[in-house]
Image 1 (spheres, each protein chain N blue to C red):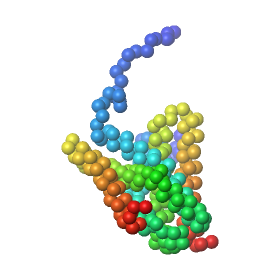
Image 2 (cartoon, one colour):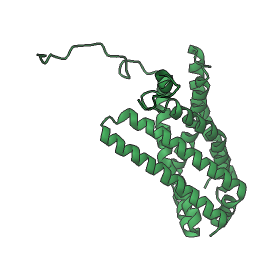
Image 3 (cartoon, helix red, strand yellow):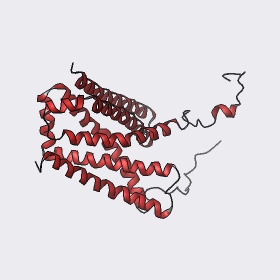
Length: 136
Length: 130
């Protein structure tokens, strides 16, 4: 008869708590978080489009919400999440071809996607405010 | 066995299919939709900027014009498919109870399809003005 034995202490494979935080690791996590955020953000897209299809009053409600501070912050976050997920996705597509995986290249690519997404978000918002004719 | 007369060997039948029986299908569709999403997301941002500060009538006219409507619908279909696949991976990574996982995976499918369809309907209504 097999007897119940005390659990054996076995070595665990390294996981998040073992590794020191690295840029590539953090950006991998951020890629997933931005993906999930965009998933939820699609509700905004649907709200906006359905409002446009419903008529001027519904559309005015969306426009009012997007002009409030929380609305602007959500839109700004959505812009950054979309651009960051896009640049991170391009980085992953490059890696899928087995290019850019060297120690220096992967760090450079990862830093570039972060700097690029922040820079592009600011550029898009500057263009947006210019189109609207200044801050309002 | 399913087909005794098959010319294919047992190894040939299962090769590349893996535990989920779909092989690299999920991975490939994720990549395919991600490549499509790059130009479509840029186009989506351009369309959004073009609509900034415009009233309802102008927004309807732009969103309902053929080229913008087609690009928006491509963006919606690509995004809905891509986020459906992506959220499936997240759920499979973090939800380990079998029944709970099954239910949440179903909710993911319902959510992605419902939102995608709602957006498509809105674009079509704006285009045809019914």
